[in-house]
Structure formats: structure tokens, C-alpha cells
Image (tube, rainbow, N blue to C red; front, side, top):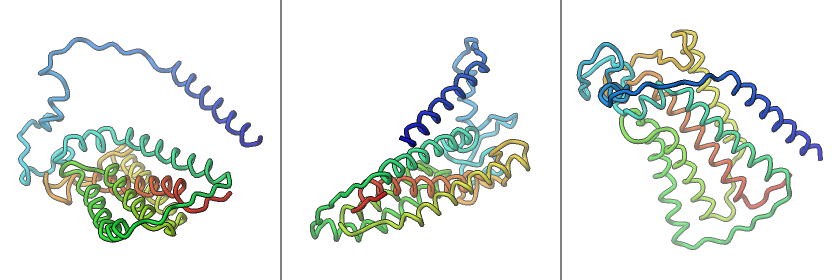
Length: 247
């Protein structure tokens, strides 16, 4: 009963907060504009500043974002604060699953896997870890990023759960990794605030477009997101699939 009252209080508080915030939001009107004058063209051509020179892969230095991936430039640089909110939603989801399942006595028996699945898991597990890490460390150079890379790492642990009925992930280590990755993201944002005057301001050199060590804080942010998403999704999987869940 106590948990029910706490839940009702949290929901009521959140509702009042949203109502208060909505009253302070003003309505915006947008004038009609021609497609060739839209800001999206500036982002695509990397000319969001007064410098509209052509961006050449592996040659252009000190570009505004330094990222060869247009999506990454927007999501992890111009709108990185939104990405922080998305990661926070996933964190709350993981915590909610662990609190709900961890508060009851559940016993989930896993069936013994076959020889093919056990053998394949031993081969694919390190491959998935390496590929997932590659994806979130190279998200500023091509397709990929922290979310798909972290999810792939979590899928490798799901494979172990399916292949070995006695496998149980070390939850405490994943909780530590989750907290460390989240703290790193916040520290990067605060450093940008102190150095550049904006939260998550890109304060590191952007380097040469196309190089691994480029794009300023973007690779560091993607690494923190990849580790955070991987640990959170793994916690969700382990909460559902571990052999015994007790309060």
C-alpha cells in the first residue's frame, strides 16, 4: 500500500509540473519559406556558419562539428541535450523494470539449450561485443552510434542467457558501469557550460573530417551513450530472464 501512495504522489507531482510548464510555453508561428532557403540545406552542406566552403573527406580541418555523419552532427552536437533526455528515459525504464520485478518473488526456469546454440554463442559473443564497440566509437564517421552499438552489446548477453541456463549477469558491475557512463555524459555537458557557455558545448578540437580522432566531444558522448545503453538494456534483460528473481 505504501508503494501505491508513493506512485500516486509521483504521478500527481509530475502532472502538476507539466501543467505549470505548459502555461509558460508560448505559441510560435512560422512564415512560409522556399525549400532552398531551409536550414536543413545548410546542415547537409555543412555551411551552418558564414564559412560555406565545400567539406572534403579526410582533408577539411576544424569544421564546425568535424563529423562526417550528418545525423550525428545534429543529434549529438546541435541537439545533444535532447539525446540526454532520451538516455534518461531509457534509464527510468530500466529502473522501473528492476523495481517492479525485484519487488516480487518470481521463478523463471530456462530450458537447456542445444549444442548448436551453445557453440554459436561462444563464437558470436565476442564478435557482437567487438562490433557493438566499433559501432559506437565510429558513429561520427558513418552509420551507427551509441544506441545501436549499446543495444548490440546487450544482445550478446541475451545470447548467453539463451545458450546457458545457468548464466547470470553480474548486476552490480552493470549498475556501476551505468552510473559511470551517465556521470561522464553530465561532466562533458558541464565542462562545455564552463568553457563555452552552453551545456554540452563542443569544446574539443574537431580535427579533420573523416579521422577517428575528430568531431570534438561527439566520440566521447557516443562512447558514454553506448556503455550506458548497453548496461541498461542488459539490466532489463537480466531482470526478465535470470533464473531466480527475489525481493
